[in-house]
Length: 217
Image (cartoon, rainbow, N blue to C red; front, side, top):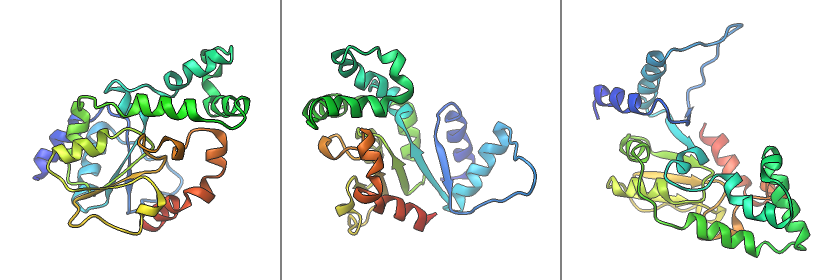
């Protein structure tokens, strides 16, 4: 893919909230790095050309495709507890934990909601399609849905999906791209990271994802 085309694609992605992770660490002393859009895109193209670029995608990418955000995911649970979701939105992780505690550790309803909400096959957004076309071989995401991997497959790429630590040691034959789903996948809702306990035990249950990220970058 030529640099001119990369500039065009990144230009289209200006409004997408994603973080690029570079293997090349740029350090500056005693000053803030301020970049305008053109500088930002130019730097992204340079990093991409050097194969130093990965994508980290959060819920914002999936919401545009019609999926619920965390607030929407937990709304019914909050109502069941007679809580106002708008007043709890600054600590939704604790809200989910409180619900589980009230149910004596039974997360079956939460699992069903995750399965219902994130297993649906939504139409790919333009942003998903653009990201899938870029010559990037690594995606990191906290999303439960399969939009990223579907977009990559639709672009004709061989995708290696990692949503549990057991999948990390092996690789799909002749893969083009790997998608690390750090918080799990909707197909196995009981293993997804959602409640406070899940985050506090992350270093025990899913720490290999963090170790791999540190090792690569």
